[in-house]
Each structure stands twice: as structure tokens, then as C-alpha cells.
Amino acid sequence: MTRLIEFLIAAAMVVVLFLVIALFLPAKRVVWHDIETNRPANTVYDVVNGFHHFKDWNPLLNYDSKMKVDFSEDKKALGATLTYDSSKSMIGSGKWTLAEQDPGKKVVYKLESSSIGSNKTMVFTIEPVVAKSKNVTVNTKNLRVTQTYTVDYGWNLFGRFAGMYVNRNVGDEMKSGLQKLNALLITIPKYDYSLHTEPFTVSEVPAQNVLVVPTEAKRANNEVIVAMTNQMGWVKKVMDANGLVSAGPMRIVTTEYTSSAYSFDIVVPVRKASSVATVKTPAAAEGGAPVETAPEPVVAATEKLDIRVEGPVKAEFYPAIKTINTGYTGSAQSLVMVRDMVRAYAVANGYVPTDRAFEEYLGSVDSQNEIDSQFKVYWPIK
Image (tube, rainbow, N blue to C red; front, side, top):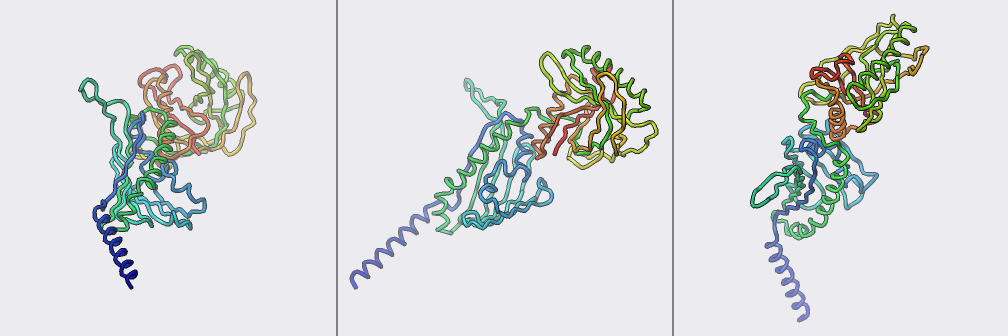
């Protein structure tokens, strides 16, 4: 009997000790980790805003290859959701909801999971890195991306004890995710596409018959113009000999762009003079948001033409391709920057660029370096 009483007293002391410790443990846990990047704020924001790059900054989907995962139709809209259900008990089921958007500054997700706790949030904040030099505070060119996880345990005393390990469990996942995020950001060109005044559009360039002329010139304005003019002479000769007319603007497809030389393909869409089938262009999207549209009016081809070629000209049939594109007004000398903007926008928003970028010249070859020259810049995507 004495031993039983001693056991009950010891058990009561353990319970009291548990309660006392639990009452002094935090009812709310906050874990944060950060990285620095030299990519523009809007690029970082577009990557973490939504679920199109979720696997690139969160390891959750890597834990169970058989996990059932569902996304809402629009992965970037406010209120977008990701739900998951795993047979593995350590993962369980849950839901992420895109709860708040502050472009270029902050993204907030609300979390639901089988782990203890409530009011769970995951927040990304983007802010300049501030440095002090001789007691003067200055902003550097880098940004700090901070990921913060918050969970409430309230009066759930077991939850408060569980909170002692949240930094190791959730915190380690956050550090791993931020490393993956940084690796992705490094692959994105540094140009700030938010400064570009024309909208970025997702569209399909229809199948076309084209004449292609590989070209190389010294990287000097006059040299490039002379090379293009000479090669277009061959194109015109082939078109006239085969009864062809233009089926769209001339394209320049960049092969290599170095400090001393520029190699590219001149691509001219063509059709027989009797061909009249065209693709009409819907209205462009407002606000720069990507939408499915057709390109500028061009003639679509259904089969390869039999074309007799001369000199350096080649006749090819290009199938339809999906692209991200934008308009640009200015000198052709800045097209390399616009191409990188298109690529940066594509990657940040979850598209996968493929092949080579190209531009449609909407004006004459001779005027390409004028400040009011017009182009349309494309990058093929999957």
C-alpha cells in the first residue's frame, strides 16, 4: 500500500511538473529563415506568389511520390489552393491557401495540416538589404527574402511541448526550401521585367513555310545591317523565282551574341501568292497578365511547299509553337536586354523556355537602330 501511495504521489508530481513547465512554454511559435539574392523584387515575388513553383521552394511534394496533390485552376490568384493527402503518417493531409498578396513585397499562405496547432501561416517578405557604412545606413543592391512560419497552440499543453521541436522540423524544411529557391533564382536573368512598358503575352505562332538564311556579322551596327541586306537579296531572289510572297514579318533568330560577333538566322515566312488563309489577332490582355492569344496577323500553313532554293537560302517548314512574347519600341541594340526580360518573365511565372528566342522586325532593316523602331520579341515555351 505504501508503494502504491508513493507511486501516486510521484505521478502527481510529474503531472504538476508537466503542467507548470507547459504553462511557461510559449503558446505561439515563430520560426524564420532568410536568404539574400540580387534578383529584382518582382522576379522573387512572381516565383513565390502561387503554386506554379511550389516544388522549387518547398520540399513537401518530394516526401511521397504517391501523394495525391490537387491545385486550384489558377495557381496564382488570391485564394488559390493546394491540397495534399499522403498515406504516410508523418505527412498526412493538408491544405495551403494563398491568403494575401502585396506585389514585390509580401506573400502570405494559410496552412492546414494534421500536426498540432492552429492559425498556421507561411509568409514570404521581400525587402532591401540594409548595410551600415561609417554610421550611415544605405540600401545595397541585394534583397533579403525571409520565410516565416507561425503556429498557435493556445491552451493545448501537448502542443506547447511539440512547439519545442518546430524549429528542427519545420525550420529544417524551410532552410532546405530556401536553398532550392536561391538555386532557381540564379537561373533567371537579372533584368527587371516589371520596368518593361509592354504586356507579356502567351500565344501560339502558327505553322509556316519559311526561308532561312544563316548569317554572321561583326557586332557593329552597320556591319549587321549590311549582312542582313545582302542576305535578304537572296531571299527575294528565291521568292520571285518560286512565285512566293511574304506571310508575316521577317524574323531574326539569335544563335550567338558575343562581344565581337553576332550570328543569327534570317527567317522569312512565305506562301504561294494565291494563298489567303490567315489567323486573326484577338485583343491583347490588359495589365501585362499572360493570356492565351494568337499572334499578329500571319498566314498559317498546312503543308510544306516545294521550293527551289539558291545560294545560302534554305526552305523549311516550322510547326506551330507556343511562346511568351512582348512588343518593344526602340533601337535593335537593346533587343538582347528585352530577350532576357522575356526569359526572366517566363521562368519566374512557371513557364519553361525552349529553343532560341527570336524577334519580328515590324519596320525596315535600315531603320532598326532608330529609337522608334518596332519589334515583337518571342521566346518559345513548352
